[in-house]
Amino acid sequence: MKLVSKILKRIQVIFNRVFRLLLLLYPRLSNASLLKIIKRLRYFFLIILVAVTQVAIFGTAPNQKVVAQTSGVCPVGTVPTLVNWQPAVGVDEISAQNLNAGGVGVRLSFAESIPGQVIESNLVEFRNEIYGTRIDNEVYGGLPGPNLKFHIGIGKNPAPVGSSATLTINFDRPVTLASPLTILDVDRDGARDLGFTFQDRVTVNAFNGASPVDVTLQSLGTTTRVTGNTVVGINENSFPNRPDGNVSVRPAGQVTSIQLIYEPGTEFGPPRQDETIGLARINICAPSINGSIGDTVFNDRNGNGIQDQGERGIANATLILRGADGQEISRTTTNSSGIYGFTGLPLASYTVEALRPNDDFRPTTNTTLAVELTQANPIRLDIDFGFRSTAVGAADTPNIRLIKRITNATRNGQSITGTNFNTFVPDPNNDNDDTLPTPERFQGVPNLETPVQSGDEIEYTVYFLTEGNENITNVRFCDLVPNGTTFTNNSIGISGAGTDADGGRYLTPLAPLETFTNICPGSNNNGAVIANLGSIPGGRFGFVRFRVTIN
Image 1 (cartoon, one colour):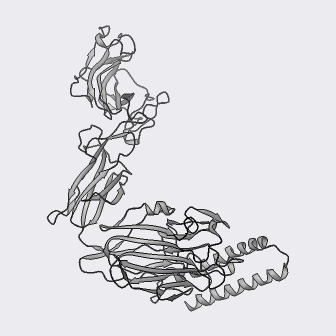
Image 2: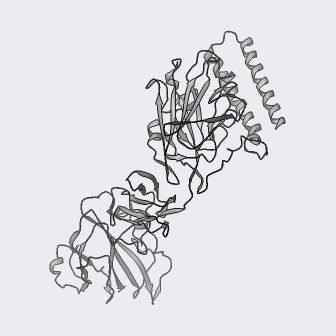
Image 3: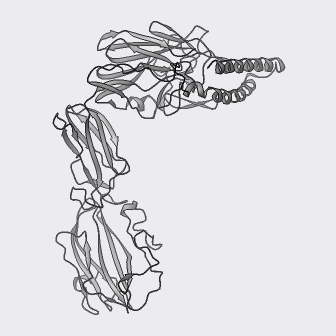
């Protein structure tokens, strides 16, 4: 570590000498041009600094207190639990997150002493860098993300002296911090900020209800000075992958809120308001009872409210967990298999709501289910939600998609090789299933490329998928037997039809088509397969299948 420190000091000396040399050689150089040169050198030295400081940041030196937050001690019955916030941009998106850690609700809020004049909420670009208040996954203060970056805006310069911005962390019940709160990157300007004066000044207050709670601040690096509950930047600002400006905050007892009040410091001159401080993830002591709620959101293709074999889970469906008072505790999304879960919950009464995945689905089960976690039953992994696809582009209007595939070919009772009938092969003349999700696509081939012989048997499957939010009634089916083939007796198979359907039948050549006259696509000169499929609900998948023999 001493060697790394020497290298860093030497690089800084070289940088300062180069800067002074530029001023001597180019006294008439404009500030803008000089800044461009300095910026290029800045990135050159950044590469060097990153290269030589990796061991310092991510190494295993036993005495480096900046490598990780110091663990605290949780009371009996609680366990350390991270508040897992999500990446977000702007104070509105961050404030809207209903965070939860083991059943403890957490909210973040922001305030300005002069509304609209202090906090930079949206992302802005300045000198080829992106600034703005946000939560992202980048390394900041030497710690891996997600970290919160609280930005005092570029567009707000110059800052009125005495202006301030406040970040408040609110808990819905008194909590003990499992490890100190870590403020990131508190510092002041340096050689890289030519022509600007910046200084971070952060005051920390904590409360349990209306009662103040004492806090102890400790510098974790070399660029800050702590006085009471206030920390200020006193040395050169550091790069984001360095922990030089980090500060720990340890409350003396349980808290319900913690305030970080940011002010531009005046110790080094009139301030310019263009700085960022950060906040690492919060670690609290949450109830240790390991209650769990979850299971699956699935595509209920037959609409019976039960996940049957072949009915796959729906990915990225949103679930909301609420307490007995109806307040949202947490929300999550299903994984690629449609599975979700809420864990680390105390024993209590809850409800789980499943949001409609998109406009092409409608529920086949209740979308809100009550769940009771008790001492005898602290785990409920049976909370399923079913939705039936009402198809692409027709969420309300009843409709039916049809497509015909060759799904098998046999010779002397054995499958003819050379064709895979178990995959989806698009038909260039029909796009009825091209836009469907992969599990819904109709398998088979539109044409059989393998040469066939007299006596070979071909299996045809006519798939259907109903669309819309209403039943499609009196569905009738007709398909003419292809010329050059003969219908194979007793080969009709039907799946997915309504309860009032029949089993289908074969009409011999030239037989009257009866009520199917306007349904069959031509004359019945080689026979026809007909069926009454009855009343079929929207989102139902099924097929009519039959075989013919090559003449």
